[in-house]
Structure formats: structure tokens, C-alpha cells
Image (cartoon, rainbow, N blue to C red):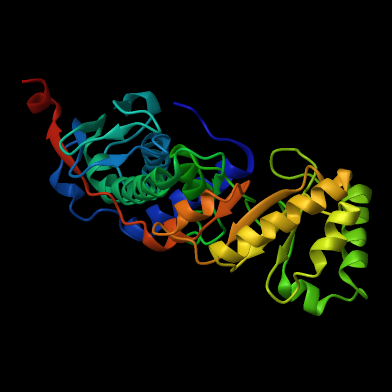
Amino acid sequence: MQLIDNVENKCIQDLINLSLEEDLLPNGDLSAFLLDDSLAKAKIIAKEDGLMACSFIVEQILVCGLQFFIDKRYFDIEVTNLESLKIDVKQFFKDSNEFKTGDILFEITAPAALLLALERTILNFLQRLCGVATTTMQLLNNFKDTETKLLDTRKTAPGMRFLEKQAFKAAGATNHRLNLSDMVMIKENHIALSRFENIIEAIAATHQKIKEEKLEDHKGNKVKIEVEINKDNKKLLEIIFKQALVDIVMLDNFSVAEIKDLIQEITSLKEKYSEAQNIKIEASGGIDIDNISDYAKLGLDYISSAYVSKNSKNIDLSMLVKTQVEALS
């Protein structure tokens, strides 16, 4: 299993523990008294086609769940050796692999009480994350033959940011900023409410802050600056490119025809100001599965879209549980 670590690990473990508390507090699984302390085997089966993502979450939930059971004394047996409570997970599809209806995705061996108690938690996570990956793949399929990269957004389910972004990446798309501390994005409201006289002063002050505080993103790279350009502030383009002030320019809520004209203007500005050659161009706003291919044909570096967040549905999966004896017979 590829383990997760650092801040991401803590966020995901906290989320899993919250989900366990949500489903088990205060008395645990009240039907567990019907079970003995034997091991059981389970299969997770696809009931529709999809794309695998965040496969590690299955084992992660089982490990967290086992510790949760021990801490809360939800096992009837006296636990003195954690290794006696065996957990084994076999997966048959790696992240980014497509699966079909009827495919067995995982085989799990674990204490029967644990398996039944965690069944819904495991499926809830896996169904959602495979759904995000599958919808992302469908969106990407609409512009396979271009150099434009698809970016995600921060419009994720609360608490699910790390996982949904991993699922998005598993489909072949590109992660944008993780959170507000990962990149400086200067939007319309920042410009309107800025304490600085103009955008030039604001961006200059931002550069100074990044330099003085040696700010880095979650990957350890120098924090980048992105500025939003909309129909009301298009005049800023000349200033921004002249002084090569930012890393990314986001063209927000423009039609395909409007962006086509802006691309011509930006190309001229890059030719005019050599220091601006490395500024990347992103389009955002109103881009969905029906029009994304038209935007991608314009030669943009990036397209960001909330389509995946708004349209992903859970992939239908089921868990079939048997006793170990039944599974081996």
C-alpha cells in the first residue's frame, strides 16, 4: 500500500475517524453481538463501469477502524495482540485503471464484526472517489488531442479536498492550488477591496511578501501568483505582461470567441515583452462537457472547471461478505 503522510495523512485520518464516530458512537454496531470473533472475507464488486481512484482508502479505513474498535472496546474479546486481528487487502485494479460492471475490485480478510461495521464507510468513500475520477475522465475524453491541461478547483465536498484532488489526478487531469495558502490568486474582489492604489502596487507587495517570508506551496515550490482578468478589467493585460508580474493569467467568464481574440492580443504582448514569455494562460467560468473541446482548441495552457464537482455521482459498488469457511469452500 502506498502510504500517505504529513498534513495530507492527518487530514485524511481525521476525516476517516470523523466518519467512524458518525456511524458508531456511542455504542458501536448494535448488531455485532450476533457475530463470533472469527475472520470473514469480503469482495467489493463493481455494479457499473468506472475508474479506480484512491484505492489506499480501503486499507486506511480498516486500519483506522481496527484501532477505533480497540480504543472504544467494541470487540467482545480481550485484545492483547493486534496481529491476532488480521487485516489483509488484495486489490485487482490500480489507481487510474478502468473497471467494468461485475469486476471484483478488492478482496478483504478482517474480523467479521469490523468488516460489517465498516462496510458502509468503505463504500461511501470509494464510491464517491471513483465517481470523481470517472467524471473527470469523461470530461478529459472531450479534448484528448490538445496540449491544454484540465485543472480542478476548490469546489470540493467539505473535508474531502485531499482525496477528491487525488481522484481528479488519477483520471489524468492536473491539480490546481490545494488551498488558500498554496498560491496567491488575485481576483476581482481582491482588486476592488485592496488597500493599495492599484494592481501594480498590490502585486509588487505580494512579490515582496513571498520573498521575505520565503513562502512555499505544499510541494515545497515558491508560491505562484495568479490574477483574474474579466470583462471589466481587460485593460490590465498590457500592464501585467509589460512588467511580467504574475505566473498565470486567468481569463474568467469569456466566450470562446472572446478568448480567441484575447489570445491574439496576449500573443502580441508576449512578442512585445520578452520577459512575459513564461506567463501561463488559463480559462475558467461556464466551461462544461459540451463546450470544453471548443475552449481547448484555442491553445490555452489550462482550463479550470467546476463541472466535475457539480456533476460527479457515486459509482455503484457493493460488498459481499462471507465467513472464512464459506470463502474457502
